[in-house]
Image (cartoon, rainbow over all chains, first blue to last red; front, side, top):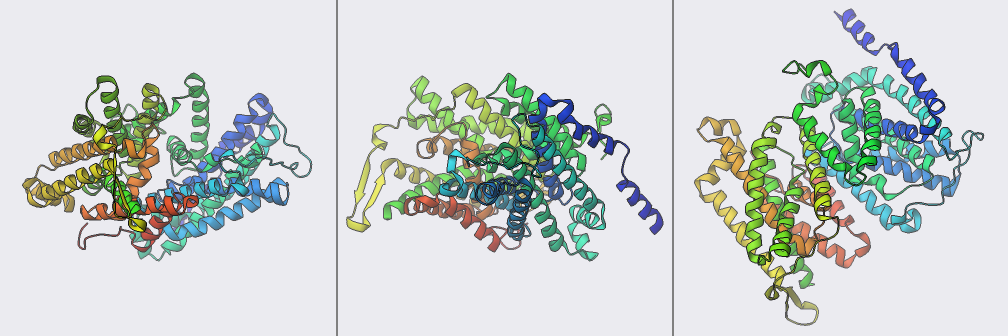
Length: 323
Length: 290
């Protein structure tokens, strides 16, 4: 019995054939489609951010409306680090991840208690508080004008960030890949299995001896760090940080992205990011001002039709969806 | 100082009327409706449109906003919201965010994104001052009007909830939906009526608040957090909880903005996080409830 359970667990974590192929294409894309490097960069960053949310939402079942808090924290700390301490991007990235993990550690104390509603409120309020802080500390952050005058040093002391975003895209893709491998290992480990146990039935998980609160706090801090990395990439590749990294729209968009791709699946965030960014690009070129309307309509229809069915096309015409 | 207290109370009363529908629907159907602010905004726009285009007097616009939003709420409840009750919280959040986005973009399209201005009738414009020195109490007439109307509404709601047959059906359904249905209460109808009245109240609040809170298409996003604070802090099991929470929030917000303008909305959010860490289920919860 134990043998077969182990085998099935191992099988699900084995590297699929298409995965290296996917990443090879992704890594080559800045050169293949060099005119689209800027949007590839954006997609990589958004994908990283989406997977970081998936860690807590899809795998652990913590509903959060304020994940942008960590993105913003990462963005501002990376930009400030580059401006005030040293312009090296990699050190800045590590610093930003450290700072957002710290913030995650503080926030994790608040998400352990209460109901879904309380968690929604606390996470939302956290990102709003940070936005307010970034707005009011204008001597440090530039307030509503955003943090300007950030000059990034060359990557690894060699590759300059250019205007066309090729370096930026490769940088973001590499960081995303590295962190992705880390997360893939994490969710397929026994630790990851305990997270899913907590998501599915917290009471039972507690009863079989899983330290629920410790696990929740750990994954929350981890996810905050990854989101911080995404924020740092955002700030470093655009050499700019503005208040809208904290905005509620960010947190809502990222939820949507995760839902499009499918939560609880590592490639869900990536698929969602690609679809969402392309959709945004097309829709906002047709109706620049009102594209949120279509996003809203899409969300409503998606939920009414059942969001499990979007990524399972074979259930579209079969009547009931089998989960 | 008394003036600030007074303004805070008026603000709090307004927030209560805006949020009470949300509190009841959340307690009743365990449904997180982030689109509640959109109902309030639509109510405000009904008033603005009626007053600007058709010269309807202000006092007539308020019931119109109430009725319009109640009808719309009922229609939406029947068509869109009902399938949502059984879904997970994440689905509900996504669904209502989607509705909010649609409302915001739609309003921007039809009404432009600029701030709407409501012309108050003359008798509501003045200001009365009582007392002198540090204890001066300056009362804007419109603020008095808000407090009177909201207090009357609160008493009315409390009466309906505590004394009438419908009220006891509602409380029974909130406490335990299945047993209530088993006792022959038409729970669906109770839901429908409650949702509709809640939306209507939101519309009315939006209409009255347009002058105080400002009205533009980003209204639902801007004030959503306030409504949620009222509900999260006040709890959903009674009317007094959200009422006290709304008053507390109103006074804290007005006083905070007056005394420490640099801190802005900071105080409110920190206060809320503090309260929620201390009492995660809300300040005023009834023991033994669900």
